[in-house]
Structures are given as C-alpha cells and as structure tokens.
Amino acid sequence: LCAGLEPRRDLLIEHLHRLQDALGGLTRDVLAALAERLRLSQAEVYEVATFYHHFRVLEEAEAPPRVTVRVCTSLPCALAGAEGLLARVRAALAADDGVAVEAVPCIGQCHAAPAACVGRRQVAPAEEEAVVALARAGATAPRRAPAHGAPPQPHDYAQLERLLRGELRPIDVLRELEASGLRGLGGAGFPAWRKWATVAGQPGPRHGVVNVDEGEVGTFKDWHLLAHDPRPALEGMLIAAAVVGLRHLWIYVRDEYPDVHALLEEELRALRERLAVWQQRHPHAFGDPDAPRPDGTRALLPAGGPAIELRRGAGAYVCGEESALIESLEGKRGLPRLRPPIVAQRGVFGRPTLAHNVETLAWLPTLLRDGGAAWAAGGVRGRSGWRRYSVSGRVRRPGCYLRPAGTTLRELIEAAGGMADGHELYAFLPGGASGGILPAALADEPLDFDTLAAHGAFVGSMAVVVLSQADRARDAAASLLRFFAHESCGQCTPCRAGTAQALALLQDEVWDRERLADLSQVMREASICGLGQAAPNPFDSVLRFFSHEVTR
Ligand code: SF4
Image (cartoon, rainbow, N blue to C red; front, side, top):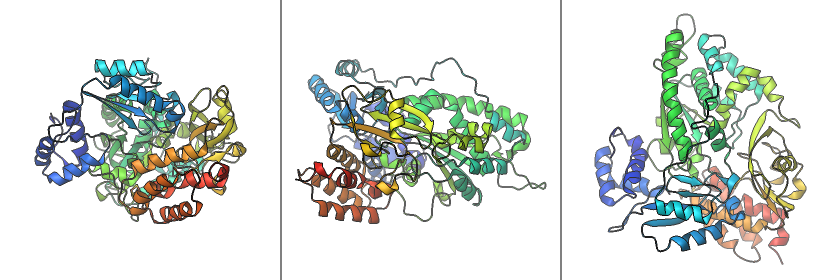
C-alpha cells in the first residue's frame, strides 16, 4: 500500500493518509507495521495518528466505516442551518451500516454554506438528499477544482523568466517588494520584504514553505485563488526561491481541499518539465545558490530546480501556524514551537526557512509586472495594495472579493449584493474566529492590518462574517470558543484548560465578567502561540460591545 513512498520519518503523515485511504481506518496492527517500516517507536506513530482529526484509529474489532460524512458546524454554516442539516443527515443514515456522520469545524466552503464532505468530496451548498445519496452510493472521490478541464488560459511565467534572464536582479525584486508594502496575508501581516531579507541573510541551505492550511473560520480565499488558477502562486514561489536562494520547497495543503491538491499535483508535473526547459535556456541561472561566483553573482536556482514536495495536512487548524506546520512537515504532531529562534533562522529540519501564505506569493507576478509602487497605489484610505476578502454570513452573495486594502465592511456588503433579504446588519467578525466581534456602528472602519486594534479586534486573514438582528453575538462567541477548544493542540495549560473553562462560562445566561477577564488575561499572556492568545477575543468583544446580551 505504501509503494512509491520512501520510508522516511518526515513522510509519516503521507503514509498514514495512504493507509487510511485504502483501508478506511487505522488498526493497531497497521500502525505497528508502519512503525517498523519507518524505524520509529510504535508510540511515536500512535501519537501522530491520534493527534490529527482526519485519522481514524480503530479500536480492537471495530470495523472501519465505508464512508465518512463530515458536516461543517462552524459559524457561517451554523447561520445557514448546519445543525438541522446534521441532524437530518444523521437520522437518514442511521440505519446504513458503514456510514459515519460527524460534525466538523470549518472546511473552507463558507461561500456556499452549509457545507459537507462525503469521503473526500466537498458538497456545498449541501442539501440532505444529495449528501445522503452520495454517502449511499459511496461516491467519495474529490470533485474537480474549477480550473481542472477549463480551457487553458495563458500564463507565461514572464517575471520569473526576466529574473532567470538577468533582466531583473534579486535586489531589484526586494526593492519592488519593499515599495509595494506587501505583507504576509495569512493573518500576521509581517512585511514580506523584511522576511525575505532575513532568510536570505542566513547561511545555506535555506528552504521554503508555502502555507495552504487556511483553517480560520470563515476563510476560503486561498481555496478560491488556487482552485481558479494556481500558476501565479507557483510562479511567486519560484521567484522567492530564486531571490532568497532556496533549495527545497514544500507546499502544505489542508486536507479539506482535495480538489486543490489534485490540481496542484497536475500543475507541478507541468512545472517540473518547464524547469528543465528553463535550465537549458538559462544555464547560468542554475547551480549552487550558496557558492558565490568570481563575478560576484550566484546561481538563482539549484541545478535541476528546487525539490518541490506537495504535502497533505490532516485536519488540524493549529498547523496553519508556521512552526506547527513545520513540525507536521517533519512527520510529527503539529505542536507550535517556542520562539526564538524564529523559523526564518531555524525552520524545516533546523534550516533557515521562508514560510509564506500562498496568497502573498501569488501577488508576486502582478507586483513585478506593474511595479511595487503601482501595486501599493491600489489601496484606499492610506493602505497599500489589494486584499482578497472572504465574505460570508447574512449577505446576498457570499464569496471571495478582491478589493483595495482599507475597504470597509459597508463596501464589502455592497459588493456582496447587500444584506440578505429580511436581515439588517447587527454585528460582524472582521477576521474569522480570532479577530473579535464588532458592532454595526463600526461598519465604516477600514478593514486592514493595524486599523482595528483600538477596538480590540484585527483582520487576520480577512475573513468577514456578517451577522444580523436574527443572531446574537454571545452565540457567535460560544461557537468560536467551541472551535478553539476543539482545535487547541493541548501543549500549554492556559490554552488547553482556558478554552474549555471559558466555553463552560459562556453557557451561563449571565456571564461572570470577572472570571472571564481573569481567564482572558492568563490566556493572552501565557499561551505559547496565537491560537491561545487570540481565543479570548470573541468573549472580550461581547463584554465590550454587546454587554446587553449577557447581563441582567
Ligand atoms: Fe497549543 Fe493552544 Fe498552546 Fe498554541 S496556545 S501551543 S494551540 S495549547
């Protein structure tokens, strides 16, 4: 079953996927055999298999399900009736042996909520009849991404070619990047040029990671971008590799996006062929990126091109955090690392690593074609460049909207066709689960990095969820805390215990303001990573802006 996969420890998660896809679940015997193949202890294999939500470790004599139906119950899907859908699907399939039905957190299809997955096939919007029919038929292969089979649009990798021809030097790219003000679009918003310069200044070998593990509730922009055309992102990845001198690249795709994974597999085959052609055309650009030449230049890409590996996540939100993602790439549990050192200094296998969200890289070809200053000028209200906003909830046309940085909620609602019929704006999430909950009165604030801090909120990956008078902010906060408690990796107590305790407190009709404030402070100050530090945002926002919902 594992033919073609090298018996490497870092490929443990790929092995587990291969086995589970074939067998439907993982028995102790299978895990023991895998441990022997990879020369790992059984405990190490077991701890990894049980860490990730998408692996099913079977009890003795337990039969694996023939098919698993996952119904998303995170906030955007909950607003669209996911709980009712889940109950109806469960009831309809109760008598079907071999069908498992589970509630799961966000699967990145919020534009077509409610969403479900039957095996590896996404169904969105999901209706009971279609989900049940697919489950009974066992039709579980991934659906095709929109770009699969579409008439080929030209994409000539022109900016990468300019770089390989020597028309554009690495230093020119860094200058354009700085002029553009491009920031990391995975949520952190760190200036891209500074990250590139830091990694480029580290000793080789240096590596690169493309993060396609967007799991933030309400975020689906990376899925949208890749499903429609992954080539600008792949070009951006190779431009980064050439400028920073990266040897090995990993693309980590969340397991909820099997359509994108299949599309990338196809595109990477084509890209490897192109790399061979580029090497013939521009031999001077290939060689050892860490060996300076007598003329002061260096090779941009390793001979034969950088090694590129496509990896599957396994249903752990925390792996969107770059150091947890790197642990996962190394075949371990996705536990965020303590910093320093930062991953730019010590990342994959201890080597300096440039880790980027995929949208950040996808902007590179446009930005170099038009110039950094021109790209920056796209922003409004003093902000630089463009953003992809994932808009979901109570609007007429939920979807991914490309708008200038600094766009307001009111403008986004307008872009999305206005509020859904019968709904009036009451509140909104500016940045998915982590970004807090804001009242309608702030609908004219620019939605960009650093603009909402005064309101105790932030935009993160620009996932905007719109709530109406039909909703309560306290229910949204409880839903988000349930998500955090489910996704906490459990490594540190403030987050592991804090999310569970806060969730319990949010069930009270009148909230205990003092205890929640205590919890919030401990979680913010003592959690290792952003998950635990941001988890109090939803209930802090409710206490700040919607206290009429939680007091007498
Ligand atoms: Fe894990 Fe939460 Fe601690 Fe992050 S804050 S390391 S998710 S327990």
